[in-house]
Image (cartoon, rainbow, N blue to C red; front, side, top):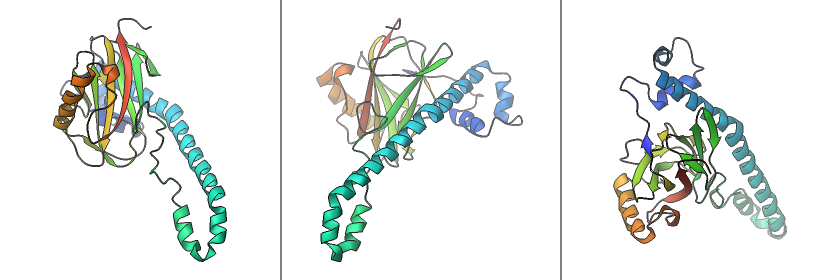
Length: 257
């Protein structure tokens, strides 16, 4: 994977997202830049399509799923604990305090966006002007553009890397690598996009999250240990790293299967 390149005068991904969020006003400086930059107009279209897909398909589904699970768990809890509550009226205040902990695992026993792991993720691809969500085992092509929607369980630090069949690790986010970036809890698209290179074969995306800061050096050290044993992206589902992880395997080919 290679991060998409821009000239020095082009607005950042954050600036494009802010321009969209503001309703694309005519007096906005990004508007003036777009009038003379076809590349950034294409980037803006990708940002808009990802945002529309997120609002239409991802956000409602995840909110409904989470609310549904919480309601079911609360109902099951009361069904199981009601006899105890009746028998322990003297300890009612304490029991009620415990009963308010609807999700005693911090909401992490099931990842509603995750493919395999604890951090929720969806991969959204764009090819020939069409945007679609990527499923496990799907085929992508060189030049396809990817964006990720992630759902960290809590505030913490996030890094996204990819591993190809050559054993090459690239940092997808944050762009430029370095230290993992601070993120807020809840689902949201990551700023920026990635354009796939011409290397064919299986490739794995790893989303890494921790409450404590970590950096690219630690990730590469863990990858070096794991790759020696796995030797293939399909066999490397996680890294020996103190981080919660979600992995996503796809195939990069010359034609769509």
